[in-house]
Length: 176
Image 1 (cartoon, rainbow, N blue to C red):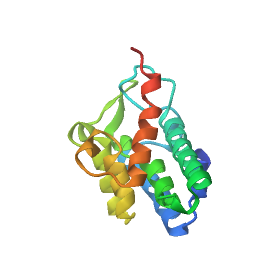
Image 2 (cartoon, rainbow, N blue to C red):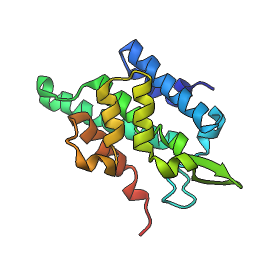
Image 3 (cartoon, rainbow, N blue to C red):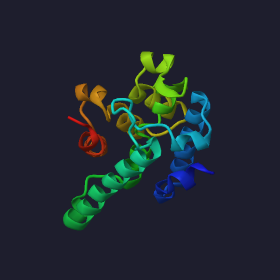
Image 4 (tube, rainbow, N blue to C red):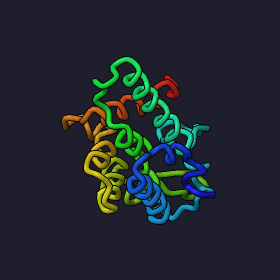
């Protein structure tokens, strides 16, 4: 199964070079984390919700869908005033959690933080991976700034959207 089959939203990226680099980032993270593409269907989107039925792919697609919903709404209402760059927003949303493939490992049948994950949270490892593959700085920024790490920088508009879409796909699933 290919990455674009698992995450068909990748095909929505119009810039072919950017699209190829997004696919390469997922492939490289899978390799670095020691996963198979089949494992992606079982990796939880978070370790903070025990036994969550939501996997990383589902979460990635939901965050991307929310981000594109914002983009569509802006386009419809604001027209030419839309400040969001579609391909940058798409690539950032699709890659925002790619670092989790390096942050997690499966040990004794359970998903836990890897040694690397204890040293570098996924926004940092994901941004470093994206940067190493030549993805635009704006995409690296979205990845790095999508979580609490981004609370100390000025987020670009696309990063602000991904940040809020990510939390909109996390908080409602937390049990109080």
